[in-house]
Image 1 (tube, rainbow, N blue to C red):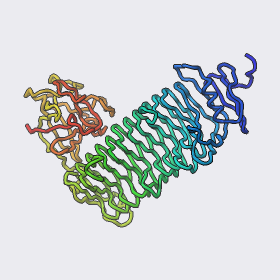
Image 2: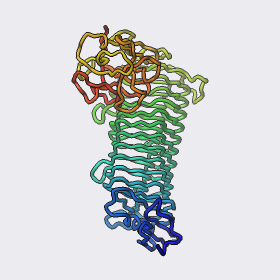
Image 3: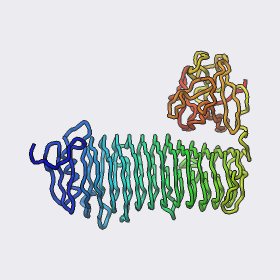
Length: 548
């Protein structure tokens, strides 16, 4: 083939954009065809995208080697964007500078109602409306993207993924997103299901670092936010607008933000495993939120409370309930270390808290149904601003120790599912390791009896009376739907349970996963399988204990 000397091999891409100095060339290297020459950087990228195989069912790639500026755009009924069709990968190796004037009307990359799109790499600077905008898509991958942004007239979001084109976006993966200087949020989702995020790192954003709205089935490895809305009410990490369930975040670091962490407006089923929240306007606000856990890490030197559990009203959105705050060091905060307020906030748990130097005291609970256990001073003496050290105020629990008792006394019980009225049992009265645990009508057999032992700190060992084996989450799995079985006791966390009082009935919560024993699919049949699942508050996840 002639005329292609010096052109990169198409082994990793089908089209390429080259050039610079205001002149660009787009080639389909797979066909040896030049598809654009000229001075419009976005038009060159779009031409390369449009040159890919029509009707393709597997992905093809455009590599953008050129750096360039977008120029300005005036409203013509739409923003100016590179639109990505299905089965398209963009690998932007050059730097894109958005230098729009007036309204922010440029979106470097947009995908609407398509599937299997990927932005493998991107370096975007300037003032886009959105750096990347995904609307009502499925199977979306964002690799390693960096957005260094400036002031805009209105929006100014780094990455926005939503349902604004008519359907929810599903199946999203983000490896790493770095966003600096966004006028609004660094990364925002709205109307999205099945999200897997590696790292979101943000600096100096006017909104949140990472904001999940109406988003379910999300896993996030790390949120690292510095100065997110430092004088306002947004947070380094925020869940809002019916966010959840099944949202798990391994770690949140937030420094100098309006709030470090904020869940609100009907959010539920959220687990944040570890935090470092320091020098924010407030540490963590858990408001109008249910079935949520914050556990592990440090909350230090925030202007307001270290953690506040709150409800704005008893109507809509639902008031806060079944929130667990545990295994934290709260030090040097201007208000309380942990503070629970109403109205109608109830049935929460505050436990294993090291508190020192908090301005108003260590822990203050609002609801009589909230348990407060094992609140101590900081083991190294702490520092902070001279407030009370240790101690717990209010609630149904007081100060505790590692051996504080839980809501169920040690003894032998029959355990009944609230939804079906059937008993928790080992299937077929088996005695071997790995036998399934299920529900069944009353047979009077000891395979339906369980020895419940309070091991301290609200943690229980639950042993079947017939087999002598303990209740176990199979394989130590942490995912929803993992099977409950019996197994010889090896003292692992997947064989230990918290029994959480929910007003006379109880949730059985696996220590290793934070998920609860659930009769799958709300079954009322004999033999209905019992699995672990994120806590939804459903009656199929609540159990009654009857002493034998």
